[in-house]
Image (tube, rainbow, N blue to C red; front, side):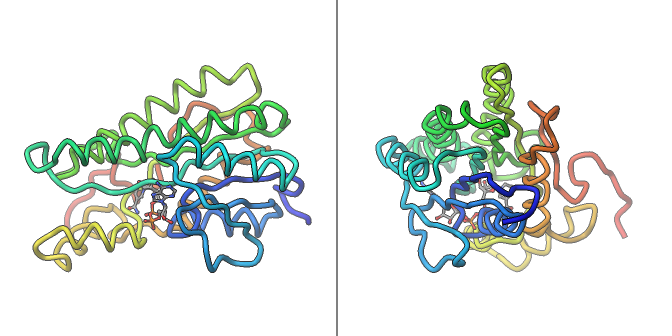
Length: 250
Ligand code: NAD
């Protein structure tokens, strides 16, 4: 294999759909061996190897990471991408949802990274990239639980980057704006008028359109690249300008 990631093994959680799938394919295009950890990793491109894993279950994560390490002889890159949406204010969000979403979106990243660290420490190009969101730093309507989960991802990214920098493991995150994936399609079903909400999501971006999964994948590969050796503890926005730009409405 040739390419920037030749000889490296990348693990992508939630790599069977959306941003994770685009990221897994981009790694394969650039020469990496790619392990997709997902609840149901079937029907994948032949360049991707699927491993069944539920990031909310430590035994499942430990088993899958051990299988990847054995199959590929190590792990160099972890993309903590698996995550789920939540719509609602605090009044509308029951305790069971708080427990489930934080378990998957936050603790899931800790479980996968902890399981992979023994392999990452052995790599000379070790990198972790977490999927954060603009919801971590922008007050979006009806995203109380989801925003709290991504705020925790941002804090976790800085904490993990600090803990592991001297071990040669870089940790960064990407903060996408709204990305056109099945995740958004499902989330829109939670609104009274999904078409109007979709139009509002497009309009919210300074660019006037949602981000594509491939655009997020490009940012993830930049952060994961061995060429980015001095980049750790950063959050890279891929958000169509929504966080920092204030454009005049047409
Ligand atoms: P998606 O729903 O298209 O894909 C998510 C994948 O994660 C699926 O393949 C699903 O099976 C898998 N998954 C879910 N729960 C899992 C679990 N417990 N264990 C293992 N795998 C699990 O979603 P997406 O839009 O590609 O989002 C991916 C990530 O990007 C999420 O962390 C999400 O919060 C984040 N993100 C998405 C957007 C967006 O607008 N789509 C914006 C910002 C951040």
